[in-house]
Length: 164
Image: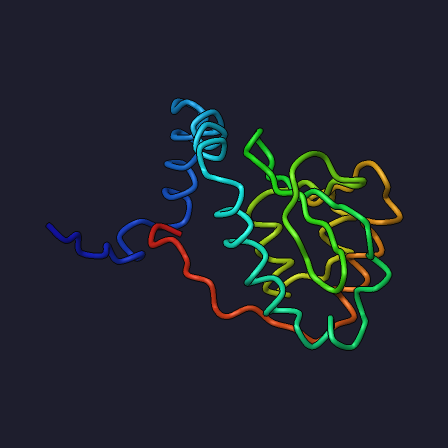
């Protein structure tokens, strides 16, 4: 059975916000479920899902040596609300997904990370408004932020949720 898309005009923005607020208040957090699922996915599968797209996305910058400043360093990306995160390292000219904590952690909402990736909002604005937060080795986090901000790159258009 296929569901027909509901026109956004039927649900004005205030009503959508109220529905989201109600769901967030009364539904249990999905974080334990995501954490449980993450633990069941084998490390090689997680590596393949993360490393290949990252290394392809930044292939030109990697070949130009732009990321050499990150050699041997690790950085963790986490979503707010206790969702699983991902720790990335950079060794021998490749991004790699690794286990454990990073030297620095960048934490924020999915929306903030999406805006950063799609380059819709200035990265400094996301950090100054505390929508993205750097913990641990802040110098490493700022180095990565400045590096990504200075590179020419873009993601393919990401799908949006129909209820947004």
